[in-house]
Length: 343
Image 1 (spheres, rainbow, N blue to C red):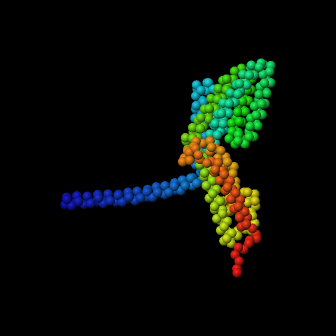
Image 2 (cartoon, rainbow, N blue to C red):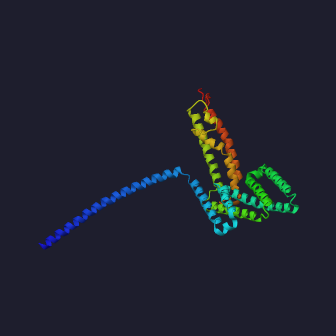
């Protein structure tokens, strides 16, 4: 009897373990189901966020914030701030002014600002030395005449197309810095410290901007130019295909040209949307080509990458887009010519 009771107790214990295991399996399955639903919902929201958010803009905004933080820390150190004083704010202003969306644009503004600052301070110190050498009675007239000559020459240089395309910002910085140095030198006995502080703060801001822009999630103007030309190719091909389909298919959506097309405004039409992007991309292509010329040479083409050829290709595409626009007008025309005749 003892053995029988022991066997019965063992069987009851095993049965309890099986029941508990079965309940645990049910709970585990429900947990897995809930986790799967949560992951699926998170994936759905992630896909929505990826579509709605421009991650390149987020990266650019993060880089600007990081650069401002680094420049602020570098100029607000006790030793540096004691040396530069209130002039350290020029480093922060430099970051705000020159940090652009693409690497090429940042390089263009940064190098223009650095070169313009160095040349202007050098010329300003020379004019200040000559003014002190002439004498106190003629010093204000000499300073005024120097500002007049430099202002006239730099303003005229800005009208030269080759200078305006790539060095316009540098010329503006040169004129502004020269006036500040010359005027401050007239009022201050020794403006060497002012010039030194100006150069140091600008160089600190420019250097940190260039390092962050190039080495942290760089956005290359050359890549944007290639993507834009490729997109124009595809859009123009789609417009031409849709235009031929509507014309030879005999499907007429309307008998008049919509007012938005006449005003060059966005309009929900497959043909119009395709060639409109080509027609309005000239200024963007030229700007990207100029910024790309400042960027370091990279990729398979190296130093021989044909940025100018891409601009010329964009001009050819616009010429083709005018022809597609004319075909679009034929599709929307009230009077259609029959292209098939019965014998």
